[in-house]
Image (spheres, rainbow, N blue to C red):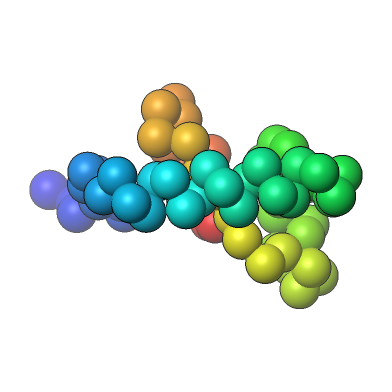
Length: 66
């Protein structure tokens, strides 16, 4: 049986709060990329500084390359 390519874990509350604050700050700038395609382009071009991936992506293979 093959190993899963991801590991589910409980995100510490402090880390989640910091992520939400970073997201709110980025939203004010208007430079947020949404969706797998736009995020992939930003990562490949070296523009992405932070990538937040939803916990409930189905199927998880969609974001496995990120």
